[in-house]
Amino acid sequence: MMKKLAIAIFFILTAFTSGKIHAQSTGNVAITNIGCHNHDDTCFVEIVGPAVGPESCKSNSIRWRRTADANGEATFAMITAAYFAGNKVRITTSGSCFSRQPNYPTIAYMSVVKN
Image (tube, rainbow, N blue to C red):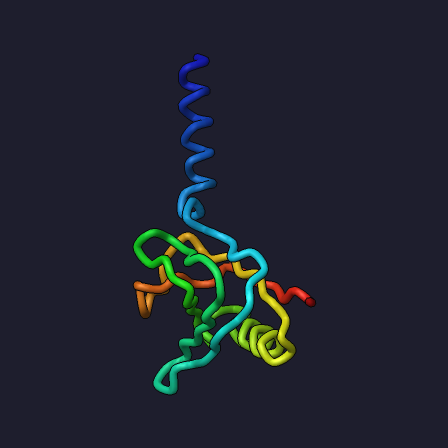
């Protein structure tokens, strides 16, 4: 009975953590470049500091979809405001690569850090 309970707990914990193992935070970092593609809703931010994200797409350039992502517009506005104010950002990447450009990580959530 204990062995079955241990196995069940293992599978439950695995289910809750799968896909998040490679999520990483940038820490408080400066922004060096921001932009968006003109042919789709892909936007990007380039940061100072070590590359983040899953091993297969670890980078200092992080992508998201401006209109398709739930808070894509707000993310773009906050990153742009931080860039022009000279403030830093803290970005946590998701556990997966950006679907449209799988050589880059994507944003799970972010915040602006006042200097």
